[in-house]
Length: 373
Image (cartoon, rainbow, N blue to C red; front, side, top):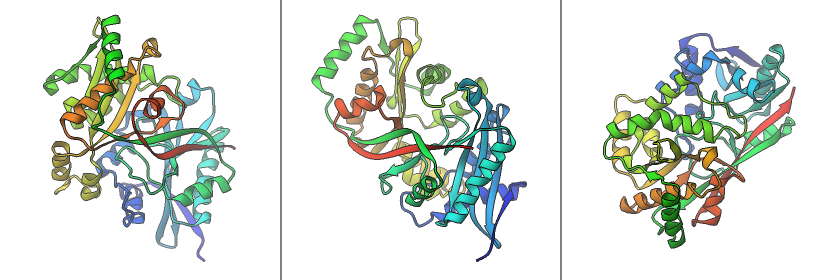
C-alpha cells in the first residue's frame, strides 16, 4: 500500500481540485448535492471577508498520484475571543473510506492547530454559521438541501474512533407544507399582533424587500447570539450574504414581523427547493446550470425553511408562531407538498414547534465533534 502524502493547496489549479474532489467521490450518491464552483471559490479565496478575522489552510491527501481526501483548517479568531476558547476548526472535509486517510487529514488539522497555540479541535464548521456545518449522525439516506453538508456513515465511525465527543446536536424535519393552520394558532397570532402592535410584512416586489435585507441579518445576529459557537456577522459578511441569498427569495416565503417602529423582530425565510437543479448543474452555472436553477425558482413543489428566529427581546411571547403560520398559508396557496427545515439545535424554541404544534416527520440528526489537543 502506498503511503499517504498531504500537500497544501498552493495554486488555483490545486484549489479547483480541492473543490471538485467530493463531486467525484460522491458522484453516484443520489443525496449528494454538488456546490457551485463560483460559490466555493468565493469562500476559499481572498474574496471572502471572513478571512479578515479567520486563518485558513487547505490540504489535499494523495496516495500516489490519486487524490484520496481533503480538508480545511480554520481558526476563527472572533469565535475564539467571544467564547474564550482556543479552537481550530476542520471543514471542507472529505475522505475515501479509509481510516488511515481520514485520520491523517484530521491529524494534519490538529498539528496546525497546536502550532498556532490552539488547545482543541472541532468541526465540521465553516467560517460562520451561514456556511455548511455539522455531520449527519442519524438518517444518512435522507434528502439533503443546498445549505447542508453530505457525509457518509463511515465518517462518524472514524471520528468517534479517534476519540472525538459530541458537544451539540441539531435536528431536521420534513413538514407537510399544506396542512391547515391550527385554529388555535390563528387565533393566538391575531391576539399577539394586536397586543404588541406588530405587523407582518407582505412584499409585492424585490424593491420592497431589499430595504429589510440588512435588518434581516442584524436580526439573525441578535437572535442567534447564544447558539453554540455563534459569532455576529460583520458588515462585509452581511453584504456577501445579501447577494448570495436574496436573489433566491420567493417574496411570499419572506415572512418578516416588525414592531411599531419598523424594527425587524422576527423572521422566517424559505426558498424553493433547488436540490435537483444543483445536481443537474453539477457545480457550474454555465452553460446550462443557471437555466436549471432559474426554472426551479419559479416552478417548485417543495421548499426549504432556510432561516428563522426571534429577537431576544421578543422571545417567549409566541411571536415565532406568526411567521410559521404565514409560511404555512403561503405553502397552501402555492400547493407546496413538503417543507424541509434547516438544522436546528435540539431543544431550542424553533425546533420544539415542529414537535408540538405542527405535524412533522423527523428526518435526521446532525452533530459537531470536538476533542482536546
